[in-house]
Length: 231
Image (tube, rainbow, N blue to C red; front, side):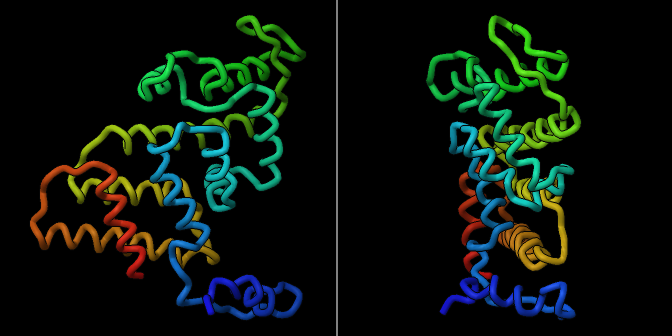
């Protein structure tokens, strides 16, 4: 039997707040099946996507990521509504679409959608913005935090897609993704430690093998995945 199949039941029994919860941790879980590691891997894999609305929302709906950007699970329906009403479908902007050898147009990109949402925040009522009707946005603080989170994912996407670093520098960058995007807490501390430990193992292995060449993100992701599988 796989221990992760029983994790929810174990947490219900030993961690229920009304039954004098007992401090406990669960070992032998498959690392790649965990929520934090799964979301972390999805962030690393963004460079292989078209940055669709679902690609990003699938990541942002992780509670540890929401918390890191001062958002809440209750904000998810609002963010989904904004994506729908602003017309966001896929693509960071026109330039990103062109990099995929697709027509260079801005409509229904994230840039297009956020421009409309920001315009909606500036207006008190429905108004025309660049030839299209925008809805008013009243939750400016949440919108700002949402955009901050999306912009951080875009920065990661751009670096993973275009840069080559030494393994040591990649490990620094991948650790910064963990620290910048995930709120560490008692529920995810084991998974958090697994990722940190895996990155240190990669760093130490490269030093011992005196590997100083620059590599692309695809190589470092494969190496990290192998390290996760060994945990």
